Amino acid sequence: MQLDSVNCEMCILQKREIVTHLFLQCNFAKTCWASIGISYVSTRGLYHIFNQIRRCINAPFFMEVTILMSWSIWVTRNDWTFNNSDPTVSGAKRKFISEISLVASHRMNSSVSQLCLDWIQNL
Image (cartoon, rainbow, N blue to C red; front, side, top):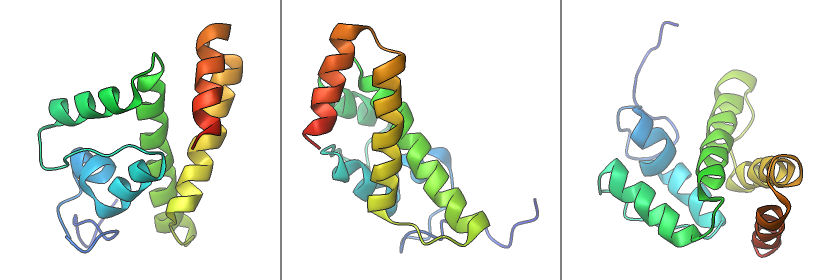
């Protein structure tokens, strides 16, 4: 794909679109994470950020949350880029809740599933 720029168009920082920026350091991404109650110091290294997220969630399904919020951010960004759909934090949060609810209902054992569903209810 030929690109005019490799800078992030979603935030005022106009930083290079690398994985860490797209999912964790972009202002849009940080706001998406904050919408589900997760905050972290985005200037730290990737390992440190993931440890902060893990501690913030403090549940056995923290990896599912990490993956599915990243997926929701990705899908929201792609909708904006390819479908001309305005990116919103509330839209990314809705996508996240929909996906994590499906995983909790169909892929987790019952005790973890109930913990996750309770966590979702408190968002």
